[in-house]
Image (tube, rainbow, N blue to C red; front, side, top):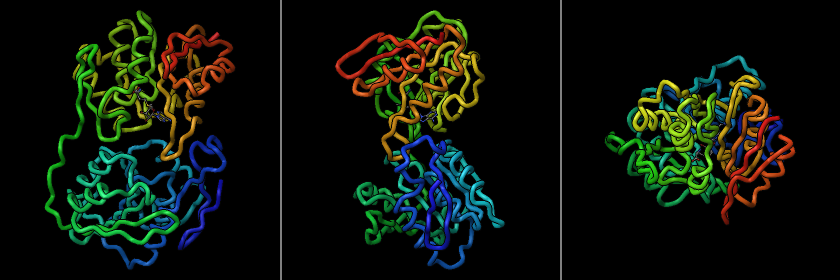
Length: 375
Ligand code: SAM
């Protein structure tokens, strides 16, 4: 836990899960500080306060007295915000959570946005915001200077209206937009492409990993998926669900679960099964979840995983390690974990240490596919 001193108070904040990440990483950044310092200078706000893309709840906890709505695509961020809210109890207000695909509150008085990682998500959120904002809505966004490009600012001015930026402070910058542009329909919500091998049409909501084309690690993994197995097979960190979708066809006796911490990923996976294998919907399950937290020990036959290598903006392998531990816990004896990984990551030894065995099913100059059996 670390102490966050901001313009009008102090919070004790953790990243999430607490204790799992590198101790040097904080649960807030200079953009949070800058936003809160600016908000402290504003008068009373008429209308709901809306926070977009809070990382670990620094903004929502600091602004709790305004009973803000907090919307984003990360379930982990939501868990972090709930955790940090419990650690900093107060008498005033409460935080209302919205997932990234739910409508935003009407006529917000104040919108506080952290610039998301992808332009596609930014665009999606700005269109959603434009649909509910009024000329009186104050829109303040913030991000690292290096993440704010001309194309970023252009999106704000095209979709919302006149936009200006602040001076940089601690390498962060604020963005202010006036809402004057006419509300417009957003372009197509999903990016769609064809999976060559099968002809499946793959739909991708704005924040989905490798949204515009098949990830090269996933492409290699597809040649090493299990065949003809029964029991529960989990596509862990499913993204658009390409791995689970392919495994579904190869394992007609199995039940396939699609699990991701991104609401848009799980929604995309569901669309991709509905459209490409509607006959198999009855043996699929879709869950927004932190790794395999919702699974009982010994309940799963196979875990397939193309693990994440960052959390928010930070490159880290702690989520991958948590996924491997969760796989070990939830697999039944004789069940297996299959992982695709960049060769330079030493997952082989991590998995071997955890499971007591690990074999390489395939390798190419960039990737390896590893298999470990629970004994
Ligand atoms: N399986 C997809 C593929 O191969 O194209 C996506 C793989 S991508 C490298 C990793 C995925 O893990 C992302 O979709 C990300 O949202 C998800 N993820 C990250 N942290 C997670 C967590 N704690 N629990 C569940 N999923 C998580």
